[in-house]
Each structure stands twice: as structure tokens, then as C-alpha cells.
Image (cartoon, rainbow, N blue to C red; front, top):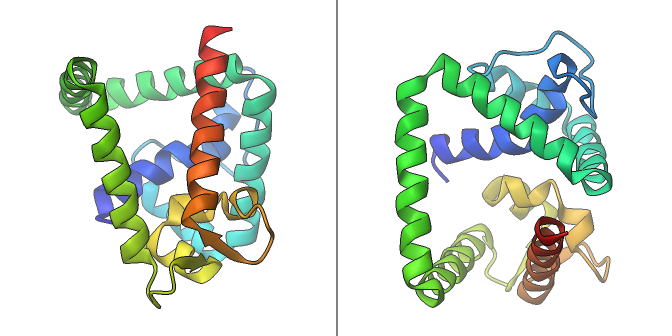
Length: 184
């Protein structure tokens, strides 16, 4: 995973836990001063220094978002607006890419789903260093850090290993919950 993707993933997952202090009605407050949008390095270092604390903050964030998805959506919108105010050109480029991709997926949803599945399979294969078809927590943390934060939620049989089937089931459950929350 390249650094830009890592930072984006980190911003989506960890930034709310660190930055929520300055957002009205935020669900998670940080312990220290809130880092700016551009301070991803400091957030990454904090999570590397105290991964358990970071995991706990992100788990609390997920639980709060599950309890009140609309509040979390508003917080994400506020963060996106802050990012766009700080870097409008990057924001315009991102919006254009998202619109283009959305149009492609509306035109051929089956192709998009196959591409997503292929990407997920490739990420899994690369992260599975020992090639046993399962991801240990260490492999997940190194090869799929975003997944590693949800490791315990995904590990349905609690064997300390993630199988492809567990990941598919978790993805289906997560996307099913998203679809239900957006309809209701």
C-alpha cells in the first residue's frame, strides 16, 4: 500500500478520533491538542507508539457511529469541508475522480464489483506473507492496516486468524448495514 493510500485510510479511520474534539457534537474527544488536517504523520506516529490506545479509540468511534450514523456523517462532512478549505484544488480533483468512478459503476455495476473483489483478493494475497490462506494479526497490521483495526470484529471464530470467508462475511455485513442505514 503506498503512502498516499495509507494516509487516506488513516485519515478516514483515525482522524475522527483525533480531530473530533473541535467539531460541535463530536462523539470522540482526543486526549491532546487536535492535529491539523495536514498532520497525518503525527497521528500515524501516535498510533504506532500506542497501537492499543489507537485501536480502542477507533473501536469507540465505530460503536458511536453505529449508534448514530447521521452524527458521524455530519462530522465527516465537516472534516471534508475543512480539507477542501485548506486545499481546494486537491478537493476538486478528488470530487472529479469520485464522480467519474460513480458514473462508471452506474454504467457497469457488475464490472465495478468484480474490480473491488479482485483488489481485495490481491491485497489479501500480498498481506498473507506465509501463504497459508489466513491473515494473522501481525500480517494484517503490516499488510492491511485498515483491516487490522477491525481484526477482532472480523475474526468470527476467534482463532486469531482471518480467513477469506470471514472477510467476505464482514464485508457483506458492513455493506448491508450501510445500505440499510442509507435507506432508513
